[in-house]
Image (tube, rainbow, N blue to C red; front, side, top):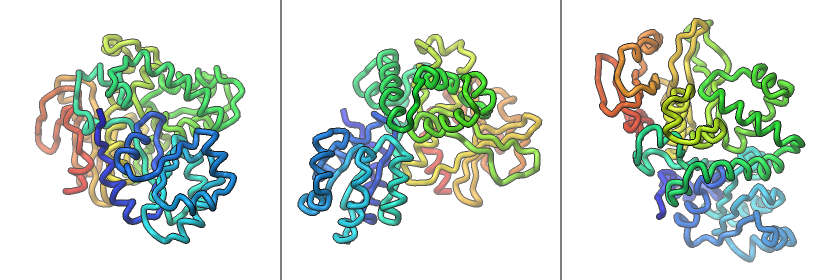
Length: 386
């Protein structure tokens, strides 16, 4: 079963405008499947294969010129020497849509792109399935626990069979190639500690102390997790309404299934009584909003707002300089007036104010809108159109 990805239309449009297109994202987020199905006339080379790398690097210019445009280089970060030659040949050809570069390591791709391909490449990101792509197929607990990786959804693989192997491969392959980390056990423990802080303000000192590492090491490892699409940080809203705003970011995982596996939550039933259920629900909602931005080809302007007295709004979407949505995310399935408390204190009177909850019915009460979790599938696109 091939699920057409929401980002495909944007990729097709940009390939008609740029000589090159890069697509990065987590391993097994569906990058190869998308590129092969969306661009079937392109030749395909997986640069994880040693024989392809040897073939190309023996005569890069000769290879590119003889094969002509219309090539997909998968896991392109494995042959960084190729980027400068692609620059030369793409400039010679002077046409759009010449090469597609994909990879699961963001900062390696971007470092070489910035050096060799600046101004020539459209940079895009593919994350695991969004709500809009696969629909709401089960209850909220099962959805959080299972996560959104294509293989689980399309093949019906159990989360308990998928994620431990996925994480082991990630630590043993990607982390070792990104940075020389000798003690992988300590790094794995660090990963689990990050999962225990999902949806919380990131305190690097506390995290480092719990992991038994230096603060600078914790900072470096967070950057690694960001670069390889395991975690992302949401910054506090930068348009300060007072000087009492918290300035540290909040920590989230790109996929809730990964977080649940690290937390050893073995079933959806266990999640119902888990102390981090609310945070994982918040994570699921915010990660889907992030996917919506990327799939539309937009910069994900996602923030949170919190004052030092504890007043917090979970998510601020800045759609344009004059258009914002303030979102409170509540894991309860029944509406409570308490859900509106912090939104009432949010000082931006021009922002649309929304509560996303785990219930099923949309409700309108005064200036506030209550959305079920299944109703957020196009909240970004709708906001941009207003």
